Length: 130
Length: 348
Image (tube, rainbow over all chains, first blue to last red; front, top):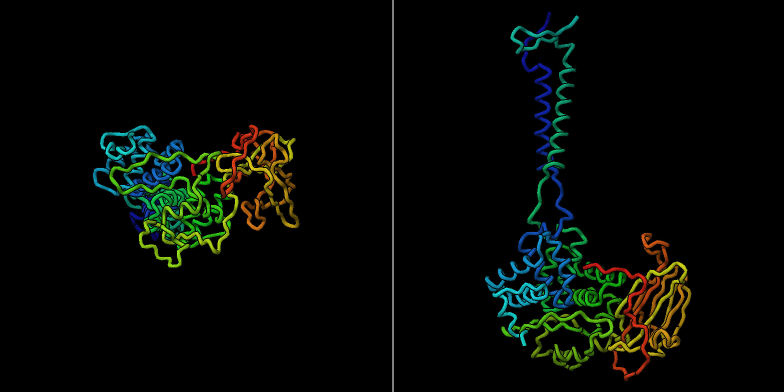
C-alpha cells in the first residue's frame, strides 16, 4: 500500500487550520482592508473640539432666535444626559482658557437661557443685569 | 477497501494520496470559509472599528446641514466670514457656496423660520452663491443681529425670536447706515470707518430691486378633506396690521391671476385667498408682479396618519417693506393662529 504518514493530512487539523487562517483573513479584511466606512456619523461622534464649536454655534443660534427648546434639541444630539451640564462645561472651559469673548458671550447667553448660570459666568452677565 | 487508517499513536494519518488529495483540499477550503465568515461577522457586526473623534466631513448629510445652518447663524451675528469659511471648510465641500445656496433654497421651500433662511442667504451671498429666491431675504432688514460688542461689559441677553406679528422694524437703509457708514451710496465706496464684518455683502441699491413686501412666514396647512386647497395670503404691516387693496399676483404654467386683499374683511383687511388646482405649481408675487416671492406652491397630500388624508393649503404672510400709515381695523383673525394642523418645525 502506497501510503504515507503525514500528520498534517489529518482532516481535523486541516479544518482547524483553515478556520484559523480564515479568521485571520477575515479580521485583516474587516479591520484593515475594508473596515466599516466612516460616513454618516453623528454629532456625538465628532472630536471634542468640534463638539465644543457645535455648542458655541448653538449658542449663536440661541442668541439669534431666543428659542431654548430648539437649543436643547440641538444639544441633545451630543447624546449626553444633561444639556445644561454640557453648556456649563464648555462655557467654563472657554472662560478658563480665555477663548474668544464672542464665543463666551454666546455660551453664557445660552447657559442663561437654560437657567444654569454659574459663578465664572457672572462677569459676562454684568451688563445684562439692570 | 479503505485507503486510510490511523496509526497506533493516532498522531499520523495514513492516506492514499491519489484518492484523498481532493478531499483534503476541500476540508481546508471549508475551514477557510468558516473562518473568513467568522472573522467578517466579528469585525463588521460584533466588533466593528469604532469611529470617534470624527470630523464634520464624516457627518451624516442631515447633520452637515445642521452644521451649515449653525455656521450661518454665527456668521449672521458676528459677520466673521473668515471663521465661517474655516468652519465650512471642515465639510471639505469643493462647492460650498452652492451647498449653502441649495440648503437655503430647501429651507425656503420647506418654510423654515425666516431667521434661519436669512442667515443662510446672507452666508450664501457672502460666498458668492446668490439665487433669485434669496433676494427678499437679503433685502430684509435684520431684526436682531446686534453683534456681540467687544467691550467687556457689554453683553446683551438673548434676543427674543422675531414674532410673526412684530417683525423686525429697522429699514434696509437704516441697517446699512448703522453697520457701514454710507457704504454703497457714496461715490467712493471705501468706507474708512467700516466696522462691518461682511465685506462681500452689498445691497446694490442701483441694480437690485428691493421688493415692496417680504415673505415673513410660509405655513403648510392640513385641514379637513372637504375643504378645497387654497392659497391664503395675509399682507400686513410690521406691527401686524392688515393692509387692504394690495395686489397679489399668482402665476402658473399657462396662466395668471390677480387677487386683492381686503375683500374678506371678516377674515382680515390684509387677507386674500385663491383656490388651487391639482398638479399646478404656483408662484406668488405681491405688489410688483415681476418679483416672485414664493414659488412652487402645489397641492400635496397630508400625512396618512392625519386620518382622512386631506390636501394641503398654504398660508403666506407678507410684511410691507416700507413704512405704512397707521390703519385701524377691527379685530381680525390673527394670521399666526394655528390652523387645524400645521407642519411642525424641526430644530434644523
